[in-house]
Image (cartoon, helix red, strand yellow):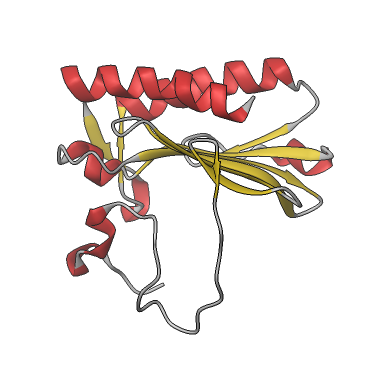
Amino acid sequence: MLTEAAREAGAILRDHFTHGSKSWEKPDSAGPVTEADMAANAALHSRLTAARPGYGWLSEEGPEDPSRQAAGHTFLVDPLDGTRAFIEGDHSWSIALAVIEAGQVMAGVVYLPMRDIVYAAARGQGATRNGERLSVRSRDALDGATVLSSRTNFEAWHWRNA
């Protein structure tokens, strides 16, 4: 369900990426947002809540809905992860979806539409890249690690103190 929803949102985002998407800054310097973010968010909300009507919803691009806290499961959504990359014409943006149960991630999907790569994982079932099982190794440092992020996140001028 998450993978199919991410692919559908990916088609919407690719269209906006190709034809242009109006952007603006969120309040309180929270970063940029685009029409594409909002369109993908609406499509994901419609698709996922129709499939699981009892689930809560928490999206980076939507208002806080306190009723989600009463739900046994919650969809956690970033409909366009890497908005800066998207705006700058970089292909490293993605859609990030997860299902949370009792504060624990139960399943998640990250889809990179411009590269047609899907990372998926489910608690107790491991992780895959385009359906092929991934392996993990312990590391004490980032040196030599594989990290999934949009390139623009590594530019120092985007960093801020939290």
